[in-house]
Image 1 (cartoon, rainbow, N blue to C red):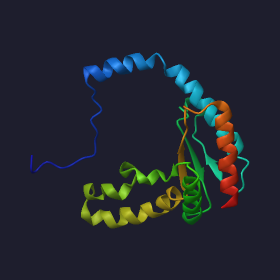
Image 2: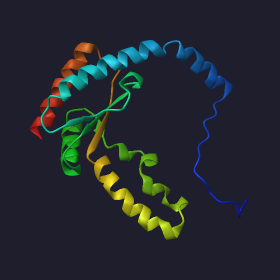
Image 3: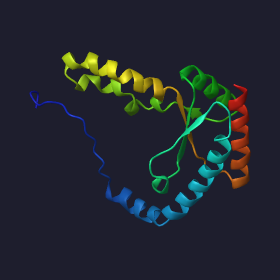
Length: 161
């Protein structure tokens, strides 16, 4: 095994117990997705009108599970300032790069050392874009009215920054 080349991969196996829980949860999936999509629609409609922010949308709206909303700002400095302001008001909107799996250079040790520098240089434009984006997780526990209020507050805080 010491001579084996390393490779990227993930084990997605679940236990029988986890499978039993997931099977029951699947019966609730349509309702959960419907509720998430309604809340994301409310947030999107309000935030799309706010100055200084653009929504990042996927290629397939029908397939969007609507669990999160991505907000793109002019540059990383603006995104940082907005994130701090939102967090001060109890709204968690963070950079998607905070998850280690989303930071490509954490994987560079799996690339041949002679190629690592050029790969890293090629990632810099993408990292600039990612650091200009904040991810907000749609809160399913909020009522529709509370979601509308949250959207108005987020838009106001973004425009004030």
